Structure formats: structure tokens, C-alpha cells
Length: 462
Image 1 (cartoon, helix red, strand yellow):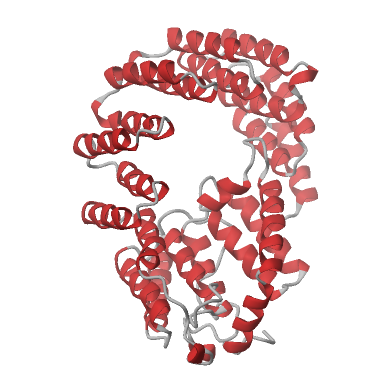
Image 2 (tube, rainbow, N blue to C red; image 1 turned 30 degrees about the vertical axis):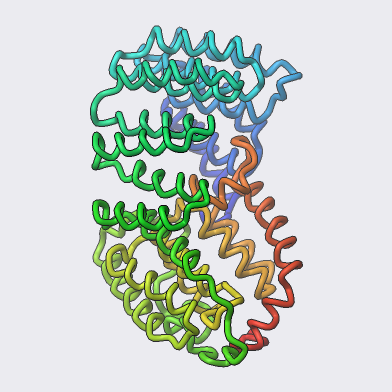
């Protein structure tokens, strides 16, 4: 009921469950999450406190209450005192295996609230109670806090200790942090050295390969970034994030201007993927964010084949040379990772580029449907879908449906998503509001460009 936006019905069901199953911790936890998604944080916090009164040993509810407290109470209104009291109560009630993590989360809260000294004290509590094989996580969190307060030497010392104590299979994560610290300090060569060591020690960890690409991008070295992306894909061929990075990088090496005669070269057929009605045809579409990274059923396999057929049609589109280069890499990526939402989102970006004759809102809609179906936690897909709705001046009902899909999916990563999520405390709806504001400003500046593209490709009245 909550996923279909029947909020009143969902509340009645939860009320029934709380009355008849108040002994069940997951029920209290889900009620709090539901109210938080509805942006009723104060009510969610009150419910969390009630749940803790019934089930003080249920660990996840203490973490939920701590997050909600930060959302409801401002630092100047006694947030830190109330949070510390909550953590102390929780430390006496929950399993010892979770006490260290509760203090760790409290330390991060203190850091965000500006309490450097108390944050350090919380991390000390966390380290003292943490199992030896997990203590590296505390040093990692402490280093981020020290970096936030400009203590680079202390941050480096904590990362050195984390590298010593981290198990071999997670040393890549520590190397990643060390590379980022070196980059922040202005030592790009040191960052590259750390990432080379990480690739040798943790060849199975694709994130260190992606970071090697991003370091070169931030250093404004597109040729090196492209080389790193190709090298990474030789090792991790099935990683969608790496293919998406490659698609983004390729045009930087050969920037071109669309020729004057490019208008009308492909019309409605360019990259349409069979979506002539502009609503994704009869292919797969978003299903309330209930999908995951991989489709595990026979239906998922059929959807993937259908998606590949769409890509084949897209690849055959008549586009000017710059757009064809985009499409070639896109098709190559789909051959390897047809269920990657990140790759389908890049295909949609190609179709939403008004400077090429690959511009096609119908294809973009279809590709974004696939992106949300296959990888609903990728926030950039929703931001690009919002861009599409603004370009097409879609109805309020369509936008509301997209927002509900996004709330259900609860995205947790994406470059655009993080750009719009200015604070960890922002809800999904608030992030989309920020995205809407930024997109509106951008599209107002680029309005003539989009209008010309709509006319050129025959979508003027779409």
C-alpha cells in the first residue's frame, strides 16, 4: 500500500500490526521507516521511542532513533545531549557486538554537528568495544573526521593504522581512502601510487579501478582517464559503473560540432529503440522500484533480451559522427552488461543531448525505464527522468508517479544524486526538489538549444 501511495491504508495496516504484534521488532522498524519516507520525522521518532520501551534489546531501532533525532532536533536545541543520552541507554541494552557501532554512529553525528572533541571521544569508545577484525573501520571513520577538521597528519596516521589492522580482502578500501587523502593534500602522484598498490593487492575490487579513472578526470587528464577505464574493463568486464565511465569519457577526446546540415538526418527513427509512442512501447518499465541489480527470474531474462533488441535498433540509427561514437560505446557496453542501469542511463543521456541528431525523447524514456528496472538504487536515472519530464512539460500526474517510484527505490548513489543531496539528512523527496530547482535553471538557459533539437528531430509537438 505504501509503494502505491495509499498512505492512509498503509497507516491503518501498521496500526493493526503494532496493536497485535508489538513484540515484533521489525514491525516497529518498518513503521519508523514508513513515517520517515512520508517526512513525518517527529512522529517517526515518537514511534521509535515507543518501540524501544517495548523492545530495548532490538538493535536496529536504536540506530533508527539516532538518525531520526538528528533530523528532528537542531544542534542548538540540545541535539548532542539527547543523542548522548540515547546512546548511553542503548549501550546498556543492546548486544555487545553492536555497542561499538552505536558509538561510531554517534561520533559521526557529533562530527556533523561540529563537535570535534566529543566526536573523537565517541570514536575512542567505539574502538575500545570493537572486535579486532573490524577496528580498521573505526580508524577509517576517525580519519574522515580529522580530514573534515583539516588535521591531515592525524588523518594520515589513522589510515596508516587502519592499513596495518585491515584484513587482506578489505585493504583496497583503506588504500582508496589513502589515495583520496593524498589527492586532497595536492599529491596526485601519491594518489596514483596508492591506487596502483590497491590494484595489485585487491584485484577483485572494482572500486579501486573506478577511482583510478576518477582521479585522472579530476586531474583534467582525459587521455589517461580513458586508458585507465580500458585497463579496468579488461579486468572487470561485467561492471556497469566502469562502462558508464567509459561512455562519459569517449567524447572528450574528439569534441565535434554538429554540421549545419545535420538537422533531420534521422528524425523520429534515431535511437528510438522501437518506442514510437513515446511511452516505452510494450517493453519492460519501472515496477515500483521492486527490482534489484540483477533480474533473477525468467521474466528478467526476457526483459534483458528485449533490452538488447532495443539497443540493436538504437545502434542502427542514422546519427552524425559524434553521436555515432557515443552509440558505438553504448552498444559495446550493452553486449557485456545488458542489465546495468548505469549503462542504460548513459544511453538516455545520449538521447537527451540536444547538440546531436541522436536526440530522441522517446528513446530516452524507454532507456530510463530499463535503468530504473535493472538498478533502482542508482539516483542519476531518476534525475535524468526528471529532466526528460521538464523538457516534455509532462503532466503533474507523471511527475508524481516518478517521485513515488524514487521514494520506493530509495536511491543511494550517483554523481548527480550526491550533487543534489546537499545534506545526509535530506529525504528522497527533498533531493528531488533540489534536482528540480537545478534542472529548471539549466533548462531555462538552454531552452533555445532544446527547442531547435525538438524541431530538427520531429518532436516539436511530442
